[in-house]
Length: 407
Ligand code: NIG
Ligand code: FE
Image 1 (tube, rainbow, N blue to C red):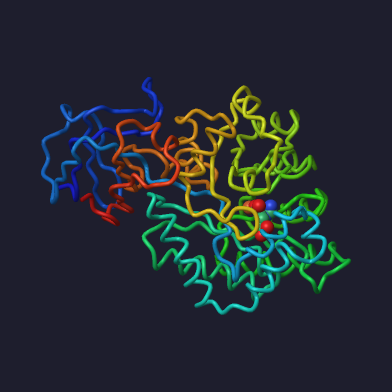
Image 2 (tube, rainbow, N blue to C red):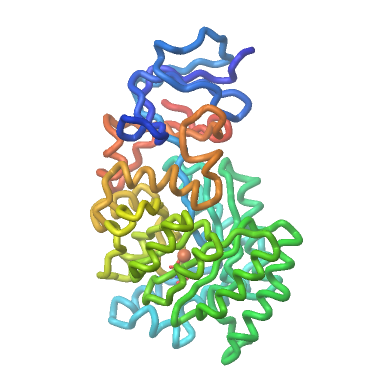
């Protein structure tokens, strides 16, 4: 048998269980075949086997392709004007209550055609993937009716076909109350459960179901209805939980075996315990923390002590996290949240894959896993959270094929 591609003269941050930080292998060799990792280990142990192509990486570091596990990448318009309002002192909640915020993006998204959404999100996707992102989650949640939620998810699927990246879609119809349901949030949740989610499941447009459980969004009782529907449809759930206040959404999501709870600045000790018991990933979103000038830190030590895996993501969205850099999020996760650089990289690889239900196939350099690799011009992995601005990504391989060849 002949391997498709053999990489040598590199150092590997496998992120697999190991006695070495980062699961590191010095002087590694990595063989890829059929879109999967066929062999990885110290070069001296490499079996003698032919490869169609062999590339020496000049001592560069190789990590799993990065996984951005929480984004709202597909939307119309932007919210730069709201940003200016917030700089003058209006809060995110006040803007939302006055009909701005998410509602203004809903208006712009409804007005946009699918081609326009694919084009604008495609540009943003190129920025993200240039930093070695090979898997991304994309949520709906700016359509808020059947046709427009469907349009967003179709756009997300199309992005996955057009770009060298694995796209996982999440239906976030329970993101905000659409204007036609003002004063009737129970009525909208019934619409989500009776019409929108079943239709998305029927067309296989959603890989998971999310909701926003918050004072300015939906109650735990309403969130429960969404989760019950998801369960009936056989879809895993995740939750925007305890971002602005403690609603107990984390306990609810854990009871439904959620893949992840996301944001979590206001999560309680009980919430952490529930997540630990159910194996739920804590997805932290330092971009939203930064843009909202949040001062309450997510309880990192609580997660560590309880053994809750921590993931880091961009939460790319036009309102609270208009960032196009997952590496910048690693920097913020270390500087704001005091994660170690190793925890931060785990958060954008192995734990992020787990938050998408892809723990068995993505996020680590292990035989049998997807041949998604990022190649870095760095001397030590800590540099991935040390630099902010600039892009040390020298090469990218997705599904065994070169996306970017090393110069
Ligand atoms: O993840 N928290 C709610 N949803 C988004 C914000 C969406 C928006 O403001 O448009 C978030 O931060
Ligand atoms: Fe979000």
